[in-house]
Length: 109
Ligand SMILES: [Zn+2]
Image (cartoon, rainbow, N blue to C red):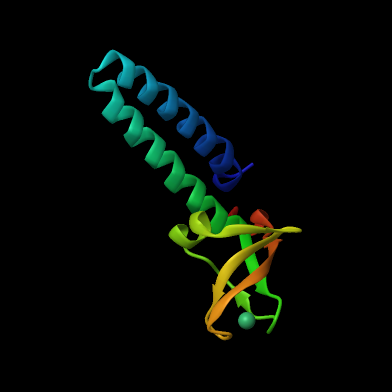
């Protein structure tokens, strides 16, 4: 168990907590709404960071390995079959890239 294995459930908990706090604050019309949104965004960023650490993408056209950033990891649309549409710098257009799971064990040390 290392911190990268904790990031995924932690980000989901943060997003859920932020969502409910935000909804509560929205209806109660108080400052809980701002905190809820803040926690939700923090969870989203954590999830994005986890995606960049846990997955790498292979372009199907040129077999180049693409490491996505946080924003790109969250924005990339699923293209089915474990693929996501990601901009390939070599092909210069968006291609369906196969996602590959990175072993997180190498981050222990
Ligand atoms: Zn490519």
